[in-house]
Image (cartoon, rainbow, N blue to C red; front, side, top):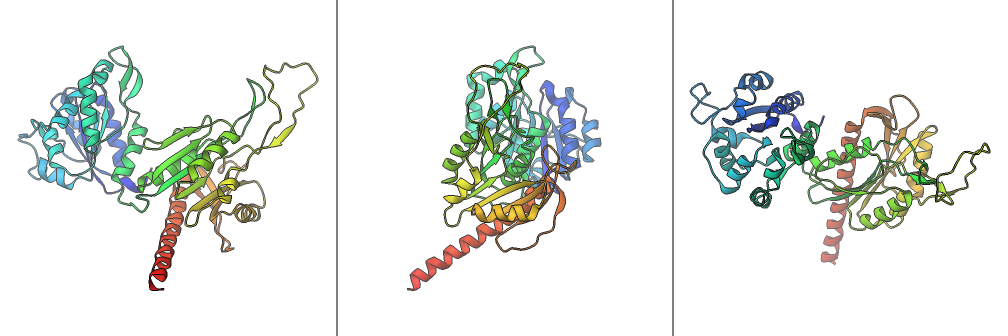
Length: 417
């Protein structure tokens, strides 16, 4: 998981939802990724999950009340609140949302929420009628206006047998929402990034399509990394892709033509464009309006070329804008990637090998190298996609810094002249 968790002080507030038992898994994952977790149980939550369980998981005393006699004197609401890098309230009931909205302070958690200046992330979990009640919605609006963040709730069947919004967000979704709030790297603050992710599907008839094996995992890893570093991220996402993390503006598309139109439009205002979608190069010249039946004669399709998405973006690239492409290749990786870099006016390109077991579509790693316009000979390495995303973000950040410096020098020359 992301390095943003490492050595960060996270207060995990657990309130009296039936989903409180899931806090143990959440705490375990946070500790596994290197966070220092202090768990806080409200009185109602203590009826749902035992303090001993969370203490064993976190390796720290669990706070259960303002006047707990066994509480370590150093663990009290002011010192913990001021040293925290993040408050995560999961699950968050309607009661704690109401307290936080009106500034009530009648237990340890509500008192600490007033005292802290750390980011606050709520993961609501409650009955559907409670969540949709106007009072709860007003409280949510108040907290959002104050800068609090939210992840979930999800919709589905609840423990109370109602169906609708109110389920605690998936643990993975909560962890991904934590990353940008816990991170101490902000080099992309104020930077607009547009990326493409996943495959495109080119219909043959209402049932069949031409596509590829892209999973969207690389795009997802990039989105998480960029969010963690403060970027505003928009993603043009093909069908059946890995879901994007909370905080990404997602624009779903199906075909290469739809992706090209959307990507070019969004790129006009972007500081960075990263094309990591696996766009189908060809589509059927004509789409049959009904399902093609087998008749023993096979199927012959006439294919025509699709728009070149990254080439179209590169052709209208603005000065100072950084455009990055990916080259998924099976042979002559460097040569093919270099050709694509130059032909499509890209600043960087990731040459990556596909068609092998541990690298390519659907895998968690890539054998890849990052090329720029300096005709260097980069080393191919097998990396987890999360590490490749971090390295690529580092390179893009450096290029943005250079572009800003060049712009400042140009302005200074104008002033001097």
